[in-house]
Structure formats: structure tokens, C-alpha cells
Length: 239
Image 1 (cartoon, helix red, strand yellow):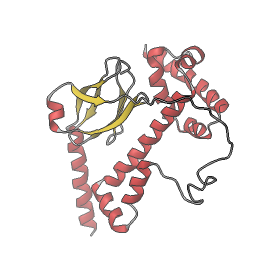
Image 2: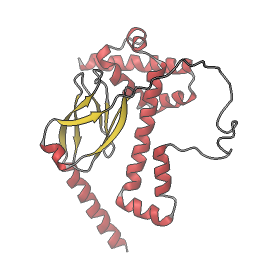
Image 3: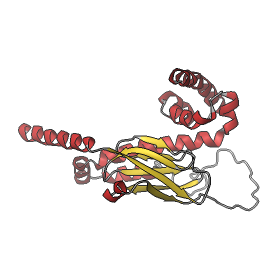
Image 4: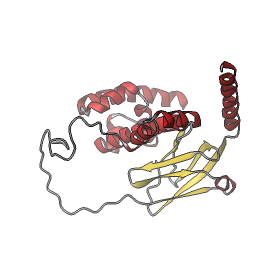
């Protein structure tokens, strides 16, 4: 049994190395009915590598056939693309996205504290509310047979990575909803061309994301000021 397990992990390691050695840089461009194409997040869900688009919507990212790329931005509808061989043959790889525009009538907002789905009778108490990716992982590991099969195929590891990516995107949206560009430029002194990079930099910081979860704006601002000082030092050292 030990010999069989050793052989399995040996071949698995060789397979992973073979896949990594075949990674190339995919050059692509976002195509959407909007002029705001800069800063769209492009994330390889398999490798967790990511990048953001330039002003013209162009991007470059390491990938291989079969990888799944996630494209996400506040102004555009999120999409996922499983890469095929032909996507690498014709450059640039074009990705069609749609504007995420919702037209609203005049709305009067009233504040009701401590009201949630449980209080309203929509959801029973004691139920854990999972995100879309968390539901996928729960389904994949809910039975012993499925858990073993998905573990051996690598699906479980992939789903766990997607949950991490989903969480980072959620933090990014929270930051962009709380602070406008002037705050980063005037208060934190982040150069305009580095603002997107700074946002990604802070959501990679586990201590800061813990503060983000509290939704305490004062603590969040304090944490951002500290991280901005470090980030500006990094910018200066690179230049």
C-alpha cells in the first residue's frame, strides 16, 4: 500500500511539473460597450495569479489550456472563461464583457437597525449562510465518496482556491464602495496609476482583512494609513 501511495504522489508531482513547464503568457483584451476598461481584475483560478487591465482593456497573464480565468470589475458583469487551445493561437485573446448598469427609480432609504433575514422570517435561525463558492465546496465534500473523488481529481483544492479569490474580490468591492479615488490620492498620497495596485496590496494583508470584516470605518482608515506608508516606500524603491 505504501509503495502504491508513493508511486501515486510521484506521478502526481511529475504531472504538476509538466503542467507548470507548459505555462505561457496569454495576451488578451477586454471588449465591452464602455470606455472604462482600466482596472478589470483578471485572475487565474488555478494558479491564483492575477493582473489588471490597462486603459485599452489589454492584459497579460500566465496560463495553460484548461485554466479558468475570472474577469471582475464593479462596472462590468463578472464572467469566467475556461481556456482552450485556440485561445492561445490567435492573439490578442478577446473577452466580451457586458456593462453592469442598473437603472433605479427614486428610492427613499430608512434605517432599521438589527433587522436581518432571520428577524424577517425569511431564513430560519441557526442556518449557516454560504457564498456560492462555499456551497460548491460543501456539495463536493458532503459525502465520503464525493469527498475522496474530488480530492483525488484536484477539484477540492480548486474550489478552496476559488473561495479565497471570491473573498478577496468581496473585500475589493467593499473598499471601492467605502472610499473614492480622491481619498487614496489626496489623503493616502497614492499616485493615481498605483491606486488599483494598492487596493490589491491591502486585501492580501490578513490583519487588515480582519479589520475590514468588522466594517468599522475608523479602524479601516487607520489600517489603510499604515499600509499606505509602507506601499509608498515600495513605490519609491522600485523607481
